[in-house]
Image (cartoon, rainbow, N blue to C red):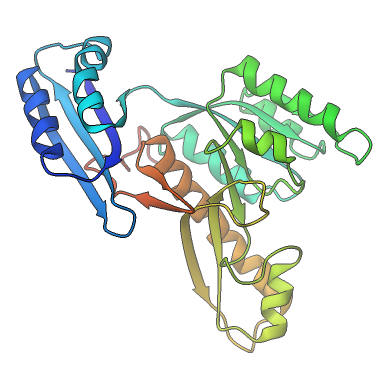
Length: 294
């Protein structure tokens, strides 16, 4: 039995849920999980519905016949095949903890993505990537060649058919043009609990301020550095007894977990952009199950 999900955002008004549930029932679909949210401040409605097509209704049939409801409610709506894995390009520099974590999660089936390429401005992780049977591209970036380097990056993304770019501690600032082209499709991990301690050496900044909590933030990339809509965050406690280097080491574990959770949410179509913020609906039953253990 084919499993799909429907994501919807539109102006909030009466009758949206009834229209969606009636449509699915009339087309032989059984709802297995549903989450919705009305933003009272913006007047926007967000909904994700997971369902099984018990009558064999196809994706194209659903999309075509749902058009009338889209028009009635001024919706942005999309149907997704749950079994289809999202194609992802990972970009990394010289800190490999997030890359290695993602490679492992994908290998055991814990992330519903297909890593179609890894791009780096260094050669450090060529072997580990190639050993995982993933294409590796080393694209050096300097002030002088940045436009050409980004053109080469986008060529890899387009030829691989990637739907998402993940900056797994990629230590280069992307141009405004690239951020605009891939708006809502680039996820970054920032080694700080944003909005505090932005820019370079955030752990050192946190250490110098004597904080008791450090954390990591995963967000969509925009032209405003470190200001993109936040998807996921987490923290870990520290004390006066830890050094600045301890902060870095402890922070790596948090970074890897936060980035993986953000990718999981995006790839499962659980994240909605809501102005400068996001709406992230809960994961449904079975979303975290892995194909393999160990």
